[in-house]
Image 1 (cartoon, rainbow, N blue to C red):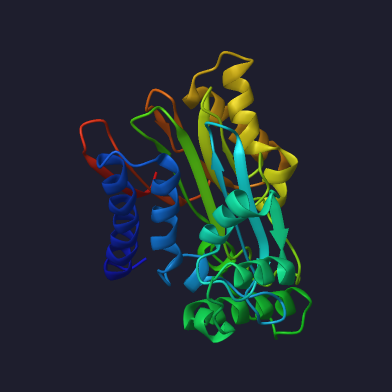
Image 2: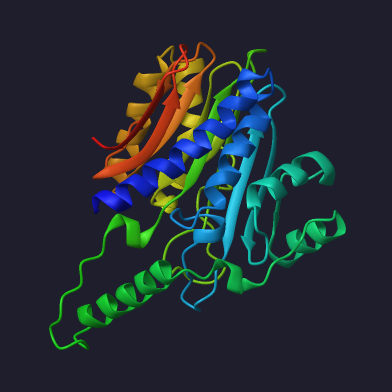
Length: 295
């Protein structure tokens, strides 16, 4: 991480924070705020969602997203998208216009087109950095199989996966969560991770908290991470911080890595992770911006 790249990442996270905060400050809903924040990150090639989505084993991009309203426990999710610029907005459209919770692939994109959403060419999602990460991982796999002449490849968390997400509490006491991702580099076509799975990578309930997770999706699905944080608060009497760390510990015991962002109905935030870093930011009750990457 060069100083220049760190500035770029911090700037991207802060722009997303501003987009959501301005809506909340103006009396807008937590649902609008989380969608706006995630859209900013989907449009930024530095993050693994939308514009900066990673590549599958076929050299294509397949994106997932979800959004949830904690007031009525409404949710919308989409998976395996190939031509949607802002998957999080389509997830909200599914929630509000389809009568369903989750749609995927061609059906989801047909629904998008029928509702006036512009489809874009796959070329829109091509970034040199993500393409190089795919080649690096392919080469590393050949090396493990003894086909690369003993050459070693350093694969980072940044190369492998990533997710963007936002959680918010508005002036009416309503919580919301939104998550979007390109998945994992070199994933099998059709693989769906935790991000669009309600209760795994995304969850919001006004009685407890709103959660958006990132990491090794298969482990987060198995551990029902986002809902478990809420359940430990609602049924176990835990604080947000205690519940978040407890559930992430369960993921670690299974062998998974990652982190989550969460906020409760009192405005408390928790941002635990067990990786070398996690791009994260929040606005405190006094309007102070906090942006961090490392522990």
